[in-house]
Structure formats: C-alpha cells, structure tokens
Amino acid sequence: MNELEELVPAWLNLPDVAVALDLPITRVHSLISERALVSVRIGERNIRSVPADFLVDGAVLDSLRGTVVVLGDSGFTDEDIIRWLYTEDESLPGRPIDALREGRKTEIRRRAQAAAW
Image 1 (tube, rainbow, N blue to C red):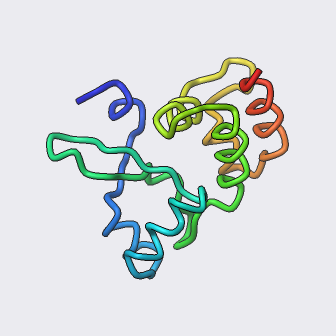
Image 2: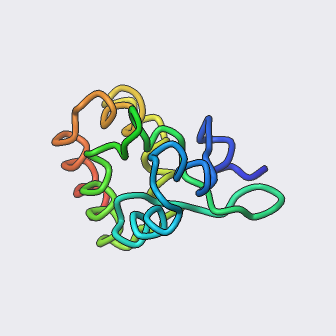
C-alpha cells in the first residue's frame, strides 16, 4: 500500500461510485473528465478509485470541482490534489477535505490558490 492509499481512509472503485450516485459508469467517467471527480489507480490490481469523502448523500461533493480545477490549473496532478485535500493543515485546523464537507469552500479555494503559487 502506498502513502496516498494510507492517507485516504476509504476508497470507492468506479463501479461503486456509479452505484452510490445511481448513474451509469459512463457518466462517472464523464464526471472525472469534467474534473467534478478525481481518481487515481490504487491497490495491487491498480484499479481507478475515488476517495469516498468525495460523495455526500448520493451526490458528488458540490464544492469539490472548483477546488480541483484551481489546483489542476496550477499543475497539480490528480494524486497531488488528493494528497493536498487529505493532508492535515494546522492553520485550518484539520484537512481541507473536511473543511469542504463542512461547507467552508471559500476558505479552501483561497488556500488552493495560495498553494498554487
């Protein structure tokens, strides 16, 4: 298991994401292409997976896409984005993903823009 896999407490493979969102798998691939979701390959079988925290009540976390776009436009890879979202930040306090889930997207977007520089 690599460091990123250990950093994220729970993962969903893409078919499980499709079930959780009640969407066809092709739509899950589109969400990834549109940057609404970020996936990486994990595990021994190298399966594309998404952190479970990216989904809330049968939907994609609504504040995720903007943060992903800001970080991605700054050259962050998908792996870097997930690492950034799950790394504790003492000044928050906590992890950016938790702040997004709590509805603090403006603060996290500002930090994402700052991280880009």
